[in-house]
Image: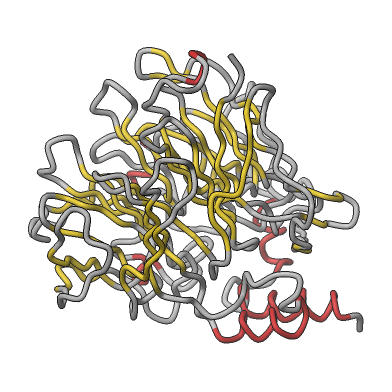
Length: 437
């Protein structure tokens, strides 16, 4: 057996041991009916489910490609999986360095991928690094370990005199003074979050509302389609709402398989999120999406997708599945759309004002690679005004050989109007500036 086939077999055993046989799934799919004659989504299993991991080769002398008039440079590098970015009120950049801690995935990465090609399966660094561009010249002169000894940190938030960080198993709060470069005070866990053995989507993102009276926590599902039981999905596949002290926890919106990036549409009080949808139904199912989030809205997971498309693997659908909301923007299947940043500055041309940048980390469950780029979605009056378009590309080296330079994930807008994109397997943060007159 080849090394590639051995990798696929090992990962299959890890991810899908509890999902039941493919034969049973195909038999269930035979009874699938489309929602309406005008439906454009294919039926489940119209194509087989593929495992197609990218081979990360690094950038060397190459660079990502932006539209004409934009310059792309390295803002900072030499990280260990820079997964997520946050800009503090005083302009510091916080970088969450974290990754999956699953021991079998780490072992597979060491055996089959190799440290020289990709560090995407190394042990999580579990720290936050601070970058400060003290001279405002685009080069961070200050670099400090802001906070360490965490547990797969991801979402970060400064609210008043508190710094919040979302570990995979809980939300922590630390005393914070604007401008400090390191946290030494002891923090407090104010909310327990679900983690445990079945924790497929381990990231937890954070955002506050405009007046700071509420915090929202994005929590992905623990599985693909609740194959470990719906009881394991308590407070998962949800966006949760709490008070800043951790009280009054409630589910703000549900049925969102893996919501990650969140943002407020400029000039509105409407929350938006990007969501990774389910796997193993074929190349063209199910599309990831970008959608506004309705309070108490249900978006279908695990029972249905994109409205009333039934998942043939999930039985005993509850009444609420009939009211599942249809997402706003199709981001295509298996793209792993993660990062989200609304453009709140004016340095870019007018077409980008108030629009949304979305980082697609890239596919593993599609026969041809998809994603591996940053998209832009134009907005007008708080709503999408056009289709997603490519903004930062060049991450894919060779489609036939599944070679990629890197994988974009976190996205933030800096006060000077430039854009930062974290490339977590290349250990690099890219900066995009507009240079043309």
